[in-house]
Amino acid sequence: MNSDNFEDYIAAYIDQELTTSEKKAFEDLMQSDQDCKVKFDQTMKLLQDIKAMPKLETSPDFSFRLQQKIDSSERAEISFIDKISNFMISSKPALNFAFSFGAIAVFTFVYLNDLSVFQVDIDSAEGTSKVLTKEHIEIELAGGIDDEFLEIEDKEIFGNEIEEDTLDKIDEKFKINFKGLIQDVMKEVKTARTFNEGN
Amino acid sequence: MVTDYTDEQLILKFQKGDIKSYNEIVERFKDRLLNFVNGYMHDYEVAQNLVQDTFVKVYTHGHSYKEISKFSTWIYTIAGNLAKTELRKLKRRKTYSFSQLSNDEREFSLDKHSMAVSNSSERGERHQKYHDIREAIPRLNEDFRNIIILRDIQELSYDEISNITGLAIGTVKSRINRARLKLVEMIS
Image (cartoon, rainbow over all chains, first blue to last red; front, side, top):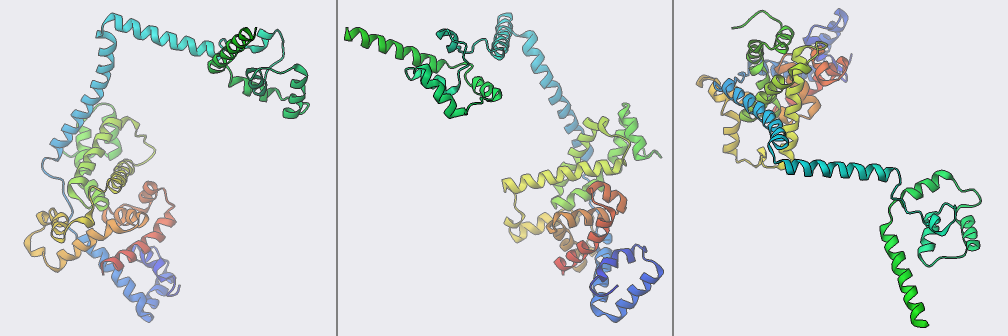
């Protein structure tokens, strides 16, 4: 024990947790080092002051106000449950039917979408079994390109090996491409009109 | 009416629906918790509200107490968490800033309750000392403040402090020395 680590032992000295030899070293240090003595005295004075500080007491209406808070907390809990049950039970049957129908429709849509029922299958429209990638679809929507060029593109984009996982991820993004479909149809109409005008 | 039941026995009886046990818990802990929370907030009314909120939580979530820790540890932890949350809210909102009050308002805020519980002969130098200590504790950093409040104001054991703060007992013991010396430095 020395003046540098003296303060680490103050609490243990006060709590009488030091061994006999540590206690003697502590007291010797206080006698020989004035700074240590000051630190110890200041700590003791602080503890005396804190102990003598008047303790706060709750106000006389504490329990009454606590009871009010408990009551309002219980009322809040009950009223939330009531609101839901009142809405479901006492609202008009037509509203209940509409709410239920809407919920079933949303559920059905989500379920069917998950089964890829709404997925745009451009391949089947062209009579091929080839799985299209994002790049293929963009090229198709831009007016199409011959198969030979597509094969070259395939190799440039993915190399010779096309990872199944990557294709699945890309396909997921194109489950519903209404915007692409509309653009495609518009393009076809425009091409037909240009062709007719040319004739 | 005060019974000989331990705190743990009282909360178990309350969990079985005994409201009298709950009331006794409130009687046992209300003043201790008020002094504890006031150490963080340094505002009597706010501290009293938080103590009430603590008891509301005990009432509504009493079933979640498990007899693996002392009841006092559990309730001090709830009160301490509410106090810390409130402190954070106050800091964010900045609707109440102690430093923004004028000196007179500050005096009133600090002493409005301690004046009520002390008689006129206690005023003067000693009263000023208590005032300085009460004002300095909330300004300690959180680690030191927690330990000073729990050890020197609440007089809890190192074991309980360790459970409440989640610190090792050795850390609590070494930190208490530095916390006390820091507080001495702040009030001198």
